[in-house]
Length: 265
Image (tube, rainbow, N blue to C red; front, side):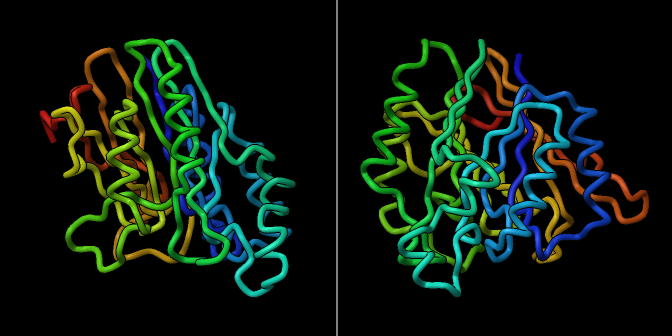
């Protein structure tokens, strides 16, 4: 069994400093095999904000895998956004925009969904999809195949924003390549469930984290996800910040089988 912690939308520069120590303490106490961060490390991609994100990562005892979010490229400096979009991210977070992690139970692949030319919308180019598919296809049979991407490939019905252009085709391809679980953020709302898109009769699980540190919440507590991966099941537990206890605490849980059908909540 493997344990994976999923954080998202930290937004240093628009974060709540009072949540930093409780979040780090809780994550380290969980002793995960990996911490995945699905983008938006910063609010405005300033060096100071990236430095704060870097310092946060250094406090996490487990390995960390992250991908950029749209807030991690400069919005208000067009030259740098178009020609040097990843300079701050690569300097402070990771020079690799498509990182991978693998152990005996799972392979986790980071996918960059940021579009420097359309700051909010995002995109998944054929090359990015091919890279993810190659990584998943090369993994030994029986391992859980997990993708980390900032922009969700399918939105809950109540969400007004539209998914990235070509999301359905991208999702169909990724499912064909064996994706079991796709982690994302961006919307600042929590969601766990099956994709409506099927491939070969099975569905993957989509898991959205809200925001772990940002003050830009959408009527929900700051949160993160804890995922246990076994040979048969994917168990998801949402941890939310309790304003009374000043701690991140387990709030709800759902379990899916590896064929990605929900079996309990």
